[in-house]
Image (cartoon, rainbow, N blue to C red; front, side, top):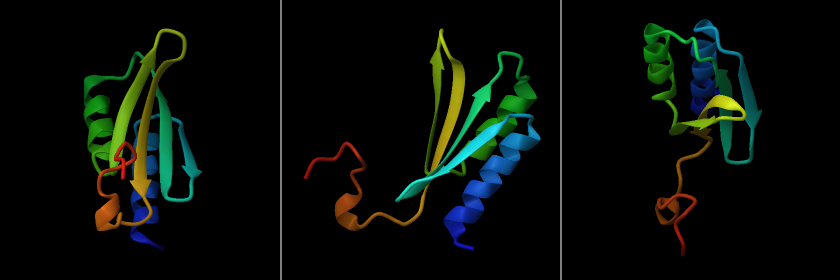
Length: 92
């Protein structure tokens, strides 16, 4: 099993262990993990959530008044080439 797949599965498992329902999606260059975060999540659970997503290549929290809070994390399938190191907003 590739390292990126092990990492994505481990993040999803840790989020599930805290009680979050995760959605894992495979994309061409990455695997994304998302979970809705309830308002009632305890401080200890937040620490575990942050420790889990810190293992991802990128992560964040989308909070809106309409849809609540969605935690997301991305694990890249391959290390970007030197010319691609600027990320998605980098212009060539």
